[in-house]
Image 1 (cartoon, rainbow, N blue to C red):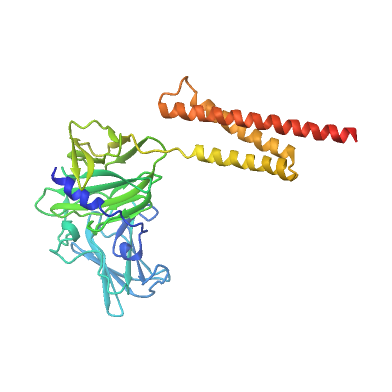
Image 2: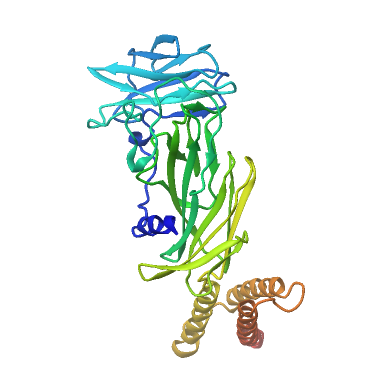
Length: 408
């Protein structure tokens, strides 16, 4: 499969954890529902957020529109009534350095917030010069006027599952395709939310400068140049059981569904069932690759991987707790260290309650369905036997103390 070699190359080095910094945000227009409809807020800062540039002139122009305004004490210049759907660029010059935003479209609902940063060690603005391509072959945001149109997720967009440090690594390679001869605008920036428990959500090198990741959400701003706009996102998910699902609501139609899963033991893709599936070896690792039909815009793609290398941690926690009980009992018996039996009984009763609750959940509906759950049930029963034995011993010791006090 042609896309597999690219996927494996990307998987060779796990993405480093990083949060969006000022260099990533520079020149990017992001939607904001707390602004008036069709308004643009441009904030100018020097080297760091909070270091606002006050009194500099910001210019917004394009498609026959030109407007200028000075920045206030918060470093912001606010623009309104620029024309819904117009493709514009914001710029400012500070101490001889000119910074420009990526082209953005004036929204019909809500507004846009743009940050222009100067003094970033010679960093270039978010939008490359006209005619140049973004790294990795991603289409650069066009400077030419755009016409309303649509984009789709092309045949080669795909999701890859791998493993690292007892976590499930997920890579999404989005290829937004514009089949028109010129740039097209879309009604609003495209947004795709990642799972709520996703860790280290990162926009990978080679992604279009039109894309940013904020609070586990991918945002890709228009307009879209002819051809492909490539965006690559990586994150990690905790493995909390033998099965894991990832749901993506797609803002545009997809022409196909492509999934690559590294085979580790019994690991396999169980949903969706992809009609074109095969296994392949790459760099000494086994992968499952599958291709299936696409989805309509607004539909949710749910990917479920089963047979994950899951090792429940509760047995070790229970073992540590029991070890602590045994140590305390040993101190009392061997060294004569005074231990309050009443407090120990309360502690053991709390552990007993937790184990009984776990046993009830495991046996809810009858016999546990899998061998792993049955093993967990048997371990809980063994732990309960130990708890009950220690409760009997502690109660006997407590009663003995009471009798001694009464006799005295």
